[in-house]
Length: 116
Length: 112
Image 1 (cartoon, one colour):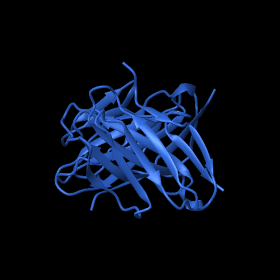
Image 2 (cartoon, chains in turn yellow, orange):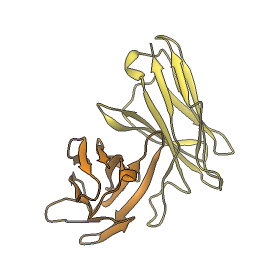
Image 3 (tube, rainbow over the protein chains, first blue to last red):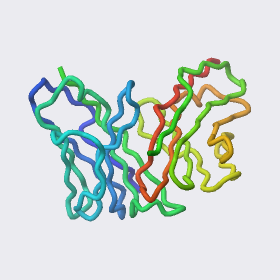
Image 4 (cartoon, rainbow over the protein chains, first blue to last red):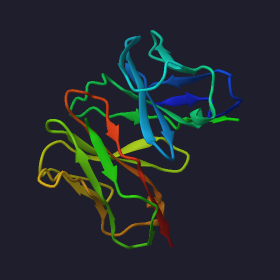
């Protein structure tokens, strides 16, 4: 069973540009969530999608957006990049995202974004 | 709101040493508690969990006990290996939200 796949693995952009990251969840998983990981802040929740709808949102500015497609694949977009957006962006998937007792969250390896 | 506090790292140990990584939490209601591990270049993996007070989660020689009276969920292992070198995250789910709140992570470095 394939795991959560994130592409690309590495990205280098300059300030002011925009970027799109992709996440393919485990087959059968309908919930996809995104996290930003930095050494200073740790893991910060960005948003969660379920059945093509954003169901939860963290405290990030509107420059961060996302979407989910009918096959559950998800993309996140960051516009007008800032130096502080440099981070590892992690995607996680689960079947329902409803915290069922035996439901597990599966993470991808992340996209390392560097903003110069 | 919910929050998780972990000890600062890195924690540096010799192989076969005893490991403790402290984790305390603040949460509404009765949270479920988790430890995740992140190996270099990889995403997070669930290591163990506990869903109610006094439960002990265990996996791969790691253990953690849900202590409601001290709001803690410390991670322990009796004898660490070089392959345990990774970043460990404590997390909780509580208050009707199914989005985990993570601690900042503790880096563990094990020397041969």
